Image (cartoon, rainbow, N blue to C red; front, side, top):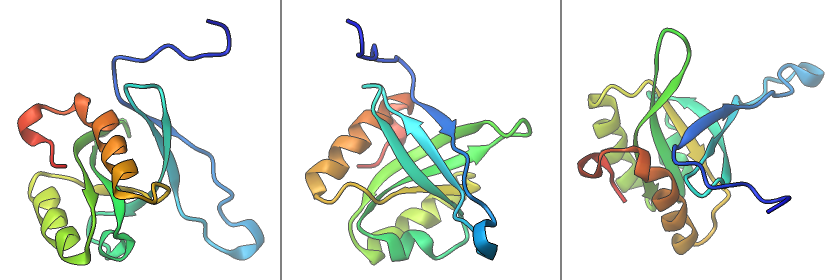
Length: 131
């Protein structure tokens, strides 16, 4: 149908341009992930060692490994509800080889976050997906 996107079988990152350096302030690096439903989720990109995931709770967090060609591969995705959940989850992400955390803060309710996780998770092997 015209004006509607067909659902894509694959979850993928879509890099966004930011206003880095606008008026002398550093901008948060942004990106977006396109889910299996074709819905786009804008995320802030953070170093896996930063405290941002802990401070972001509640949020959807994607553990990402970036290769030499700068292509992102999701390792895991989860809805982080509390700071304690975030600490444990980030440790697992680091142990799994994640180099970045992509944080989606625009889903307000737990049910919305669960829907985002479900939309992004199919690209991951079922045993690797945390919800």
